[in-house]
Image 1 (cartoon, rainbow, N blue to C red):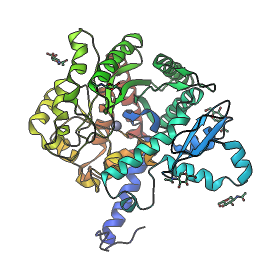
Image 2 (cartoon, rainbow, N blue to C red):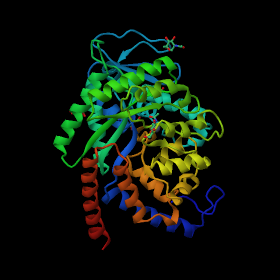
Image 3 (tube, rainbow, N blue to C red):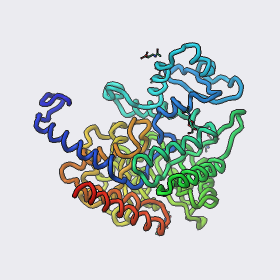
Image 4 (cartoon, protein in one colour):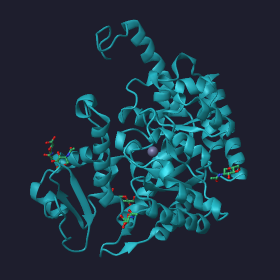
Length: 439
Ligand SMILES: *[C@@H]1O[C@H](CO)[C@@H](O)[C@H](O)[C@H]1NC(C)=O
Ligand SMILES: *[C@@H]1O[C@H](CO)[C@@H](O)[C@H](O)[C@H]1NC(C)=O
Ligand SMILES: *[C@@H]1O[C@H](CO)[C@@H](O)[C@H](O)[C@H]1NC(C)=O
Ligand SMILES: *[C@@H]1O[C@H](CO)[C@@H](O)[C@H](O)[C@H]1NC(C)=O
Ligand SMILES: *[C@@H]1O[C@H](CO)[C@@H](O)[C@H](O)[C@H]1NC(C)=O
Ligand SMILES: [Zn+2]
């Protein structure tokens, strides 16, 4: 137990004991027993605990590593010696390297650190938002060479679904970049290949775990692209939505909002579906910022004007009363990701999270996990726990939990019949849970 009554920890010892008791109880409820519904905001290559990447994927045949001049590593699978990259050492076959050094524990631990933001003293390691975001994008690049290898792409998704299922989740919506995957000989596969791979993996997974409802994909692109590229990308999204209606849910932008282009910059591209009479649902990240009054701060309003289905984060929403009124009227929920907001330095103490105000006002909310693997968190239960213990405060109760979990299905992109059935299944699980564990 941490020290109490000190400057850095102003709780009294009695407080702490009580909080410890409460938190243990909350975690038991959240983690051990309960069904958490759906995870609606997670990113494709941040789903699987990185141990699996290190212990399983980097131990596969033909895996090469190079060491960058920024103290990180890159990986690639190749049948022959790969062409070297700027600012990276020459490629070394990992199997030979491991044979040479005999004990790989330290090397593997360093790979683990490369792949997550986890650190003992985050305030010292990441003093500012730019710094933590830079590490975040670096860690993403480390995983990139592993997860875009075609066979790993499929196994990764399967393992991701397995880890989410194990965390009591029944359905997932994945924000996916759908990058070109590569084969051992360097051949590239296109987005259709990736969508078909997702379809196959989800089908295979639900065949093995019939009470899992499946997964759908929200196609995403980095918000650094220009208007011309955005037009092309939105056209691609419309085609994918037409060709894979069962698994493709819609479109979104990713990347640090403060540094990227605002939604309004992409207005021509984003108007295309409506202009052509085509349906392409949007699921925009918006308001993941604490810079009031900037262009990016307008994203919340623009997301609603483009009829977004949900708002990713909406951290800044409490500051915009008119937008907030509109999102309530349009019944557009915000996807709150507590650990992500804390790690990426929008709020340091989760008791101060602005969503507390929104929930008090009855704004629709779902809880999600954004990039659990990069944060060293579980699929979703840690975020529920943080919500419960952080901004939930003393007024959070079983009813709140139930509402949040039902919301995750209510605001999913599942077809209405499936959604109705899913909520029924969930309510049966809920009643069983209440009867068995609380009475
Ligand atoms: C790695 O994962 C694959 C599939 O996900 C599995 O078939 C294989 O046995 C695992 N290998 C190791 C070494 O864990
Ligand atoms: C990444 O791995 C390399 C090679 O083992 C190591 O030197 C470096 O410190 C690691 N980077 C981080 C951020 O841990
Ligand atoms: C390998 O190295 C680690 C850390 O340096 C150590 O804890 C472990 O005992 C070593 N394993 C063997 C088999 O020597
Ligand atoms: C947009 O980006 C693409 C690819 O980077 C580039 O080829 C093109 O010239 C850019 N267009 C404009 C108008 O800047
Ligand atoms: C958003 O939905 C409203 C009402 O259905 C419609 O009038 C409007 O044209 C839509 N806007 C866009 C950009 O799709
Ligand atoms: Zn996100």
